[in-house]
Length: 308
Image 1 (cartoon, rainbow, N blue to C red):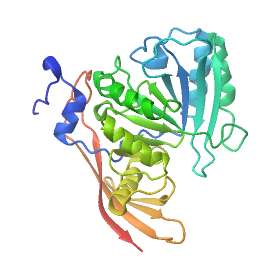
Image 2 (cartoon, helix red, strand yellow):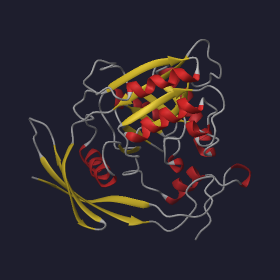
Image 3 (tube, rainbow, N blue to C red):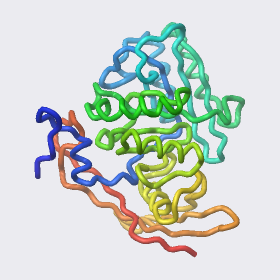
Image 4 (cartoon, rainbow, N blue to C red):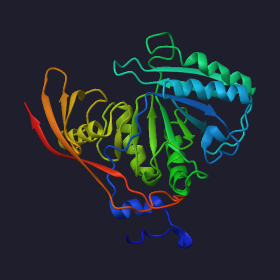
């Protein structure tokens, strides 16, 4: 195993190592449909929400409700601000493929106020709520979880805030430390990685114009890795497209590491496209700054595209 590059002062930096190795982005977005956001301006423990010193009963209620629907809990704060006057905010964001994305926002001053989150989790995307509200731009800056998230995430968060101050939040760990800086746009369910400040502005400008670009795209969080890789391949081949331009209609597993992903496009094009995707395991290496031991990961590659 070759030794990955070190960072400043000889310290290993996983994001630098991933770029040196050329780790591919497609197929690496964590599968999630619902996010719970909790504004917390103090220090974030390495394990995020799990490590907060909150009322035990409230914490258990929120955690259990989140686990029941596989929602992800993220801590958030405004970039550059470490104090908040008045109540802090919380939100439940839910992705729905029909386009009826749902946002439910509230505030909390006492730990017990966070119990309102459990009720918000029971609201379906079609119920009254913040439908049509602009998406939330979450930039992972969770330095106590991984050094690269802070080093690379904070400059991106500050740059994006200058353009979209009402939309941008720093967030705790979203997954994929080695792809830092990571941006999750929710509830759109679109995950980007390996950006820099300039590239982040380009990606978000295109995203808000509903023109998703393949460059820096890790995947759509409602899809599984082979499907993410297939859609990213189509965006790379045919150019930017709307969030729902490509619809995965079926996925056939041909072998343990081989899939055929069937994709449809809307009228007037109404194309049917088959994308073949293969996977392989990488050699064992250190994948995160704080990784206790070398590990392997899975890479998904689109090998062919056939349009009917």
